[in-house]
Length: 235
Image (tube, rainbow, N blue to C red; front, side, top):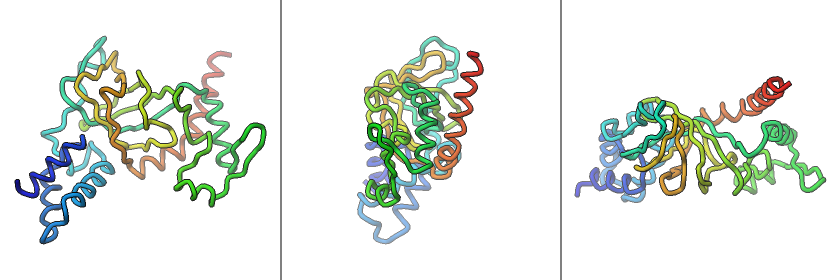
């Protein structure tokens, strides 16, 4: 098997989006001799997971399935082919928007709570956690959480998704905007909403840095506006 074909086979075995011939050629011919296969796979994976599925030339468009048009209005549709999507938004429906906004405000002040005690979180402590905040405002409700997502396929079609069963690894404090996900055949779409469960969903990781930064910076204001809107609507 030639290096490009071997690399493609290895990429597909990890459930990643099918790579374009341009990506395979670039990786396998840029150096002579080419790097070891594990190194090539790692490079391809990093590039694919950081790319925008709707515009990248790193993905083989002819081999990527998209969400069915009929799923928007149909009572129930089951995917017959695997579909790669990217996450545009994530929300934890198990917690009120006010509580999430209040905790985010505390995070901005560098505070979190332990019982009734207010704890100041320093940059050094955050660094010890690998740069990932362990504060309540940065993570969801764990095993009791229920997340709603906005997904986008290769064609740019957007669709809501809900956790039917808890997906390990899906969390407000861990999931990146732009993260890739594989929806396996058999995935149910009901009235335009993808129903997620561990049997048919594979979280692939990654994120698009610019998207994630913009989403994170605007999240507090969005939560506050949504919470106020909800209150005014029930007044």
